[in-house]
Amino acid sequence: EFQRGYDYNRNIANLGLILNFELGLRVGELCAMKWSDINWKNETVFIQRMEDSSGKVVDYVKSDSSAGYREVDLSDEALEILRRIRRDCKVLSEFVFTKVDGTRADKMTFVHRLEKAEIALGWKENDNMKRSHCLRRTV
Image (tube, rainbow, N blue to C red; front, side, top):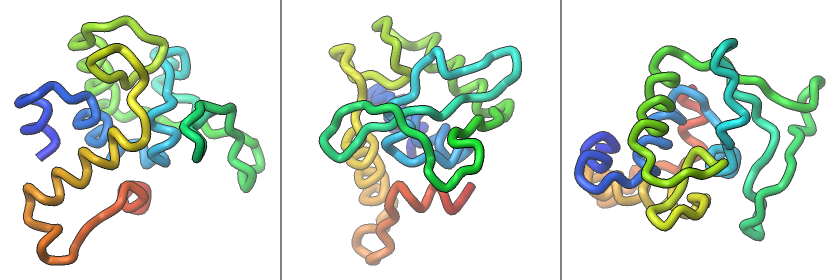
């Protein structure tokens, strides 16, 4: 459904949600990811910020991690998705995920796209609604 959605309207949240099945990030971490967080040579992404409840991007250190930060390995699939985002991007931005107008895609961009996919798949009527946090558990 996410691939179909991206092919239809180029909404970057579709690729972000596909990527998140590989990374398992909190949606606030996903939307705050910057290109500078990606280490292409080591094939990792450094998770160091998130969108907070007020909608601002803030530095973020996971408090229950002994290292205080996370570096997530990027699979071949994740790397290809990131390359595709960069290749298809029409606007230069420090953030990986942007809206059509060039502003950073926020948490609600991803949440709304996930809900639309659920409706298209018939999950909403069956009370099987999933939330973005379910992606974390999948990973």
